[in-house]
Amino acid sequence: SPSHNGEIKSIKDLAGKKVGVSAPGSSTDFFLKYLLKKNGLDPAGTAVIGVGLGATAVAAMQQGQIDAAVMLDPSITVLQGDYPDLRILSDTRTQKDTLAVFGGEYPGGSLYSTTAWVASHDKEVQALTNAIVNTLAWIHSHSPEEIMAKMPPELVGKNKELYLAALKNTMPMYSETGKMDPKGADAVLAVFSEGSPEVAKANIDVSKTFTNKYVEQANKTTGMNAK
Image 1 (cartoon, rainbow, N blue to C red):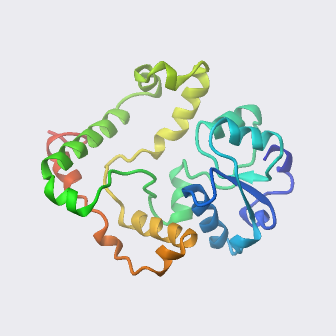
Image 2 (cartoon, helix red, strand yellow; image 1 turned 30 degrees about the horizontal axis):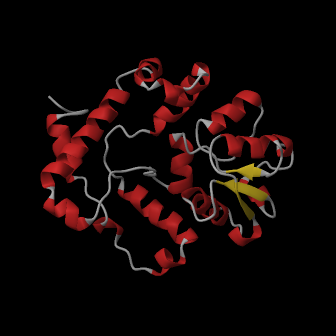
């Protein structure tokens, strides 16, 4: 947080500190536990505080209610705008830090369903995949300004400059292929294993939890590689 810039200079300095997450048991909580353990710390030695997302997380950081936080955009961009010297310990909005933390791309969002539904709705699954691949292709062929112009006014909000800055920060996160990186899938299992004893104990074959065949088909007729 802005008031703790001087004492917290690395992940290791989070030992014994109060760290905000959206909610205990959430993906931000799992990420924190993974990051702490990866840096040789016992996750139990750091106090996890639920601060929500958006304005509540920003306020908690500004008021010094927490020492650090796992935050998403546009909240982090808001703080950076108010505190240019804000120290970011790990910025997984960037490919560099994502690869450093996870060893591969980390799929923060994806199309998913039950195996049974996918097997019995091939046409629908392909159509959904085509839509996502088309969207990714459009994102990477347009400027942040052009993308913002297509967004609903209520999503952009009153501060267009802030929204645009957050958009520029998050655009590198969007996949250019739409494919699931096997290393990324392994990273998701590793992260959730730190936060969920049930997942840690389960014998999960990650390679059976995803498929890229629909993306490969989509790329033949639409999206990035369409002829």
